[in-house]
Image 1 (cartoon, rainbow, N blue to C red):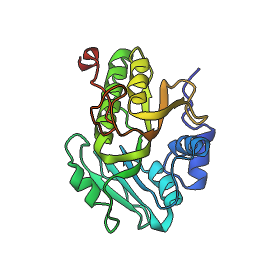
Image 2 (image 1 turned 180 degrees about the horizontal axis):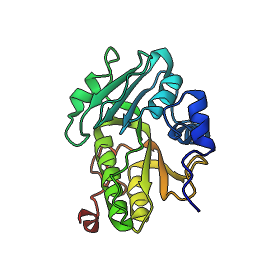
Image 3 (image 1 turned 30 degrees about the horizontal axis):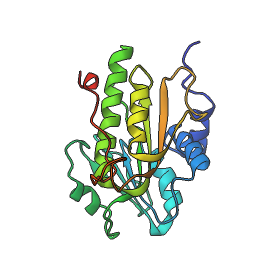
Image 4 (image 1 turned 90 degrees about the vertical axis):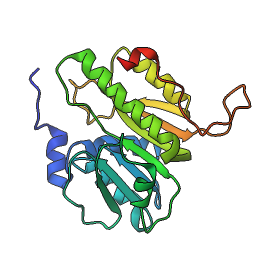
Amino acid sequence: MPRQLHDHWFKEAKREGWRSRAYYKLKAIDEKRRLIRAGDAVLDCGCAPGSWLQYAEAIVGDDGVVVGIDLQEIPPLPSGQVRRIVGDLREIEDDRILAVAEPRRIEAFDVMLSDMAPNTTGHRDTDHLRSLDLCNLVLDRGTTLLREGGHLVMKVFEGSGYPELVERTKAMFEVVRPMRPPASRNVSREMFIVGMKRKGGVKPGTNEPVAGGPPPVPDAWSN
């Protein structure tokens, strides 16, 4: 079937004033899992065009803060709870990201979000591997930017490496639930991985302390 850009969710987003149909994806995930709460500090990785920022700011309220990072500048939101950083998540240091949350003084975020996607090539395997790379980046940064007990939502394109990514996420979170919200297009290969309650303490079966970090990336993913 031809791709229908102006479908129900597109029209609803335009009618209700959200910046994209992606608003309803996060809304469905959060209403199911109750990840974001009033007063939370939320980090949105790959925040353009800003619909996830819009959703998160409404939930965290006046006592919370939402920090968005993207390679491109996006128009500001009217709320004073949203901060924006233009740059590459690979290159921005933790201290800078946390400092942007001022006047809130935080040591880590309560929730991390990622709707990041690679520039697609049309080659299924290439796009899948690039999507995995972005998810690996989010997991790696989450070891220091996401507090113990915090939650994660990240998008990935399905493919051969998807099961390993789920297992890798399980090493970092107590509960992992893949979800495909109704607002995702039928033709899309996107899936959202929800990680709840970031682990801390020690590695299972050892006395080696960890900060809830993921295990090493499988060698096959480096290509």
